[in-house]
Image 1: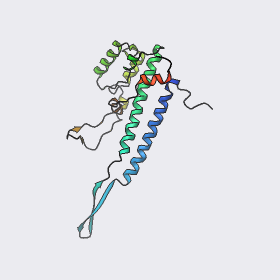
Image 2: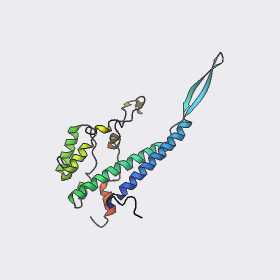
Image 3: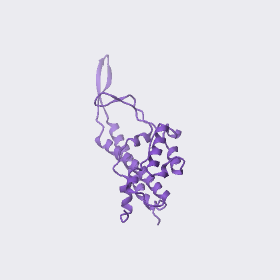
Image 4: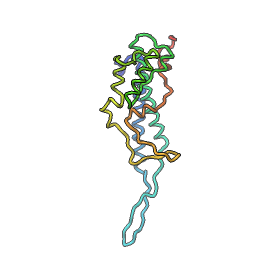
Length: 203
């Protein structure tokens, strides 16, 4: 029986596993959130007299620490999957192994400002990554996925009911599209190290 990921290139098999783990972590986070929400509020009755009783929220249970860990893991795998896929596309486009120095430059950009994306393309082109430059097939595909160009993603936002405050009391702006969350997510799973897992004999 053919494996369900057989249609993927061999170099992207690990990406499929990452996406599967991200999906599972998201499911676990949903279950955990549901269990927490069922007993999240601590209620207390207050006698107002005349036979009336007010029920007020006296406390809120802390969010389980595991929730942030699951969210972090899912985002980390998603970011790594995107970067690993981009690396594979660059290497496939040139049909030769990407030098290590250039490999460390390959990461999916996420820009809301068209000018910043143009600067990104120019920088990559100047460093020898011509596949990512303006006017190339891969460069145009990446450009079409940027937040400023992908209008279909505008609805994918996360907006809290009210601003949240950091430790110093400064207001943190609401997160934007999901892509912007990935922008600030650092991952140690660099494409170069990912590549050598599949080609240990090549240096």
